[in-house]
Image (cartoon, rainbow over all chains, first blue to last red; front, side):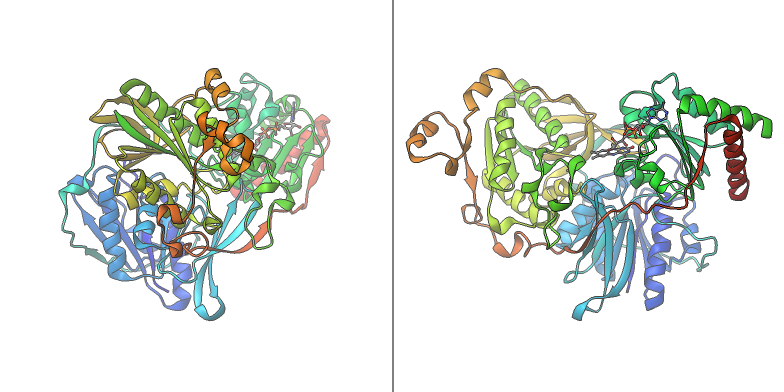
Length: 331
Length: 285
Ligand SMILES: Cc1cc2nc3c(=O)[nH]c(=O)nc-3n(C[C@H](O)[C@H](O)[C@H](O)COP(=O)(O)OP(=O)(O)OC[C@H]3O[C@@H](n4cnc5c(N)ncnc54)[C@H](O)[C@@H]3O)c2cc1C
């Protein structure tokens, strides 16, 4: 079971995107038991600064092609180059991060290879299937998160899947492979460059869920943008990050960057405090893997209590100030 | 003057899915759900209309789906589309993104002379965001995904903003090009009253009886449908047959219900809650 992972660089930091490391390790856990190789494919203007990290998470080899003309996402050029790399290896599995870059290129490649691509998988495993031998089982939420579908690509190769950042976990202990890089020859065709990038402005990133151990999230139940200050204070007091439900974002209590869920970020903190959030399926899709979930909600029937470990039935705007007071005392 | 194609989809309102909406084979029983115009596709349609209104041309809205999907085409006519096409055939059923993009791409080729294809970023039933790019691949157009604003356009090129997740990109492209549009791009217009009066009877041909048919024809009420044979499609590349991905299993999501510890709202209870939180907090940090 040979796997290929699309390696992506964050164009703002020049470093690897976390999802590339997460998927490298995932590919390693899928391929290793079957003695398969894990190969990274990278195209861009220059390699990510921390490329070596991939080898610490199970990468066997990296194929790369660098060229100044690939500074920006020229989809068609990326398609041709990555497709050539994939074809040269004839892998069974190809994984892409479901980033705005991965979701731009992966479908082009799947279309051009005439194979299946399953978006936003939350679980991937390899098992025997009928007379087809070992294939990839791809589990994904569908239908607005109301169902979990297991998708297979039994008759085509490669079997392609995309996964969002933060979904696959990294282990504490991991393999340490020697660094092995191979420059991949590409006969660059100028006609692949079809867009002109006039300017690029980095987004100011206000939220960092990746390194947050604690997330305090507010929902519609918080009541107003003014009350939302309490959510921030509680997050501050616990050294955590501020999250939100879509309703809180839609009401303008807080910026969209904070949204957690199916159409926001997927988070897995150790502590998740949901304040005035009902816990609809689309929200849960982004947070239910958190280690400890605490719910504060005035409705005892709110679905959030079904997945919570600790709960208080009450008004967030009365309870949080008391919590803040005791937190200060406990210091 | 530009010939613009909008790819649209009628989707089940996923906020209201119930158990009997799934068929035994794991595919969706769309008939059991309220159906709506896929939200992102409305932004694509609005962008198409805005471009046409300024530099002229034609907006053709195409959708692949069951006859009922004619509803969104009717809505497109209300909003100002010049032409609509319903691509419908039982043989298209259960298509994955590869098979869907094949049918749409062939339709675009059949229309001919298309300069610009606009699609929504993704559909709320599958959330794959794959059909747009897969069509671009098959028709050989340039593509720009996650378009969050249209800055400038004329007969020779357009300039858009792309939401590149960590950065905003300002991109210029000449035609032909395919764009996928996000909800930031614009505010879709309301249906136009005059056009609503003109098209409120619009429907597929089979829904008119013989006595109504001539009136329907002369009033331009018939929403044209195209089947596999009309588009000279390769049956092996359509529907379930042409789909490399198969649904293996479907599971409804059930809430687990766990080891929930409840606290009262008295200060002492909250104090205990804070203690316990701090304990978890110390454990985990
Ligand atoms: C395609 C799609 C994608 C979506 N994506 C997301 C997503 O990514 N993230 C997301 O969060 N949602 C998403 N949603 C929306 C989701 O379905 C819910 O509407 C949303 O999560 C509800 O947010 P909420 O819990 O804050 O609001 P509500 O459901 O309105 O719940 C508010 C809760 O607050 C409680 N409450 C009210 N007042 C108080 C008070 N004073 N003190 C304590 N509790 C109080 C109420 O009892 C209630 O449980 C999506 C929906 C769709 C259709």
